Length: 384
Ligand SMILES: [Zn+2]
Image (cartoon, rainbow, N blue to C red; front, side, top):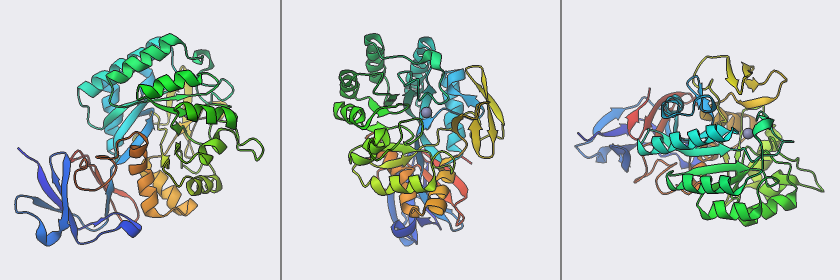
């Protein structure tokens, strides 16, 4: 039976994009129209909302865990299901499930699990993000040094083969560990190459971008600094208009001033988008979890290793949007795009993902006037 309904009673979109007195028409997993409330076709069941705003379901390109599980600790379809469900309940309707640098067998298992998840159409699963293991030891952050290494021909082949079975595959690499030729091969195979965990100079970064890298991972964190004589990877990212960048807006990873500079610099076509870098704790009240035998603890809005190194972030997409709006002064409609249409554009999925518009997936988040989550529809199905 077709699931056909009309969301009414809420404003559609934030700030300058806001439209009132209109309905979002949903049929199964698709938004099939937006019309004034008096024009709702008779076969659509009205679903009355009590004010608030409808925005596009979030798209998160860096999700290591959620619902109590970390993908690294058990890379299976069941784990993917738990993680995507936990994030759906926080408004994220598409996730790139992310593997932190791991040994070869864990990486192969993660690729197999992601391939199965894609075949099984696990709701909310968008694809795989391999964050490493070809990362700089100097900028390892919470990654285990023992698994970090240069990319070889076998790695390259495995990645290109993996992409054939996956809708989206992103890989974070450091230009120090991957040659421009390898980056070109990955890009040619339609793998989204993102630079991160790197001490690369601005010149090295530019060379990697010219070879086909299209994005930068959690801008500013775990990378060379932006110095006025040597602007490093952040400078190269902000300078190159075509390059996208993920950023963690939790008030901890990046200062409001640096967030603001980055937002103002990335005018496009490459844009700045939000990632949560969420860990097992997302969507739970759990206080600790394990990564490679090390305990990561949650305290005061941070996730940290015993030595204080940040290990992922303790924030959800809506919290990151509020941080941008309240602490950085970003316009609400821009913050919403940074959580939905910009990450969709980064991976080339802009035709049907990341907007509340006709023909798009029915991924819709209902928030109240205080920007608190009220309801989520993922592919037209309510999640709360
Ligand atoms: Zn990282």
